[in-house]
Every structure is written in C-alpha cells, then in structure tokens.
Image (cartoon, rainbow, N blue to C red; front, side):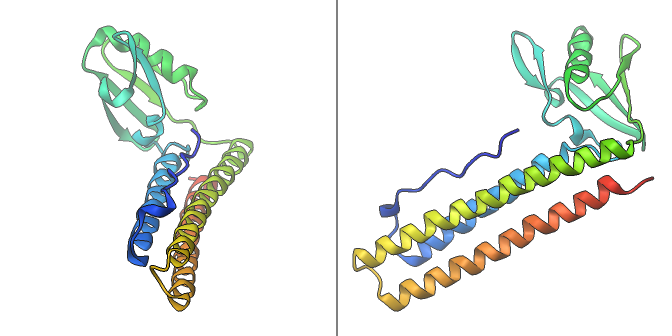
Length: 201
C-alpha cells in the first residue's frame, strides 16, 4: 500500500503562524496514523486480525474489506478464525487470503475459515524487516513533505507582510522541532515493530 502523500495546502490559505502550525501538526499526525495502519498489516510471528486490513474480497459485485463480510477472532496465538456473515461468501474470502502476499494457507469447514499462522522463517523475517524499512522511509518523506509545505506557507506570510522577520524565523524553528519530533515517532514505531518481527516465540 503506497503511503498517501498529504494534500498540499495552498500557501495563501493561512492568516497566522498558528494556522500553519495547526495544519502541519494535523498532517503529521495523519502520516503517523497511516504508518500505524500499514504496520498493523505486516506479519509478526503472532496471530493478529489486523493482518487482513489490506485484503479486499470480491463480493456482491465490488471489492470489500474482510471485516465487512465476517467476524474475525484469535482463539489462540497461532490461529485466526473468520466467521462469514453470509456463508455463500466463504469461498471468496478464502480466495482473497490465498491471493494476498501474506503466505497463509486458510481452510474452511463450510461455515468457518481457519487460518493457521505459521512461525516465520529467518529469511521471511529479514524480508519483512526490509519491507518495514521501506514503509518507514516513505512515511519519513511524508513528514518532510508537510514541513516543506508549512515552511512555504510561513515564508508567504512574511512576504505578504502578515508577520515580522523574527516571527518567520521563530515559526521555521518551531516547524523544524515539530518535524524532528514526528520523525522520532516514526523511528520509534519502526523499532518496536522490527523487534516484534525478529522476536522468535
């Protein structure tokens, strides 16, 4: 899933430095939420229903997320069960899981799908960490893009004589501090997830 780039706000849409800072903070928070969502679907050695967040099922003539079609449970650390609301969709759900890149092997008894979560091989762990680093870098770039937009907006406020040179300098420093904080948050989330992936249960 590609990291969604924050929408660029028109530099002239702000009247004060506070407006710019609020905009930047909200956009950076959105980058963090996107990262958490994407990380949830990266496998670790433990069963988690979030694994299926990115899977779409061909049902009722359109693509639907699994959790719109079924109840998901984790009855034990290495098993996920999926109970379709409508058993006629059981084949479509199973097919979507098989077609995903999660490497899982579901089976069903006509009413319930069982998905065993096998232990990760060392090679698979390394691949997942590589993927995690790629996802992390995309989101770091997302935070920096917000900084760039916010800096441009502050410079426009100065150019339009809405703020003084001192205000501009202070605002740029504040945006940099905010950026550093959010990049640190991205890195911390990445480290926690990496530890999770590499931990052998």
